[in-house]
Length: 285
Length: 305
Image (tube, rainbow over all chains, first blue to last red; front, side, top):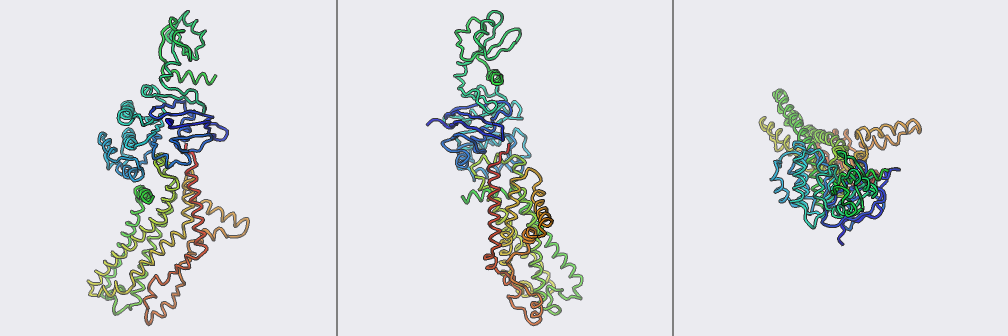
């Protein structure tokens, strides 16, 4: 079995609001999946269901476990950073290490200390004395010292400056990721993680709009920059989105082969952000 | 399993430093009080000879024992009062603060169940804080007895006989330990209630915990003309079925001739059998268990987003 996560008809209601609405997908081992969606789309609820923090309807299996009912066992093989501010402010760096070492069977204190040596974080400092970036570095050092099969990052770089964000993802790729590990990331800053993703999912109003590998994405979606007659002809092929830029039309096609579009204008691979906007607009029609 | 609980309880000591700071402060106050009393007594040393602690000629054995026992009991109650108030604030804060500062998401990202977390907080309140209280009480007694012994010796009295030999120290300390732990178990339904409120409330846990305890007796009084709830809740502290009747009059009357060891021993006044077999003790434990279970469920099922 190569599937790490299997979801079949997963739903979660809050009163009459369907935060997650009949969602089905699989996540395979050794992938980096980006879960993208606007605010209130159901991203966090879906992650919480995966992490066993909330109950849900449907069949959901993570590492072969029922996340809500077997959360403790699950957490031995899953790590997550929910937000940059979740480390308690009163705790000392050394105490965090002591605690995680005592609690987590797959935590390597040696590794965490090595990672912390690369930062300016002192072991005697309290979390409240650290800058926001340092708190994230601390959290990431702990997470990277845990031998987990799945790492879930929910807006991990929110509120951090660009230097920290770049460093964060570089560390993650170089020091952490390998074929045995799987990473699930949600973020608003799609452009920054686009290049490291192997798979992508779009979610809006609790429904999955897209679930694809990045390779398949570049085959299935094409962006055409055209004007005049070329644009006219291209319109006939049914673009899913069209925008005007510098007097030219930027059209996005789904499932239209490149051969059909050749000669009509400039063909490009669409950015994830553009694709995302087009899909959301399409869903709202 | 036990390692988990030890790590969780150690975590509570890191977060709530008042658990060990409060007893240190109380111990300091008690010792300062003793020093002041001895200095004050020293002023009148001529008139009082060795004052009441060391009096061989003015005050008798019985009075000295009564004073020492009074000191034991009085200082112990000071600790119980201080740590009792601390326990109320601790339990009310224990499941509320982690939601307020959002650290709950970090704690829950580790392989610890909600039950383990909540139970570790209950154990901190029912076992750790009482244990700290007992250690602090005995430590304070020893320090104060040493201070008093030095004073008595300086006045030419025999501290070994007058201070250390006049009351059964080990008995009294054992009695203190039993009383403190029994009290913690006896009051545990309140701790369960505070834990539940701490897990449940979205704001001001202190107010939310005490409001029903004030309003329900008022409503019961107005509509049913009875006070069963108030008696069960507010009267519980005084009703602990642990002490066998102490006849103060008999104590002093007999004391005129001779006070037996058992009479001054606090242990002689405890009836552990009565406590263990009392239905009220067990009702309290069950109520505590139910409320703690409710707190676990709230922590587990509530969506924090």
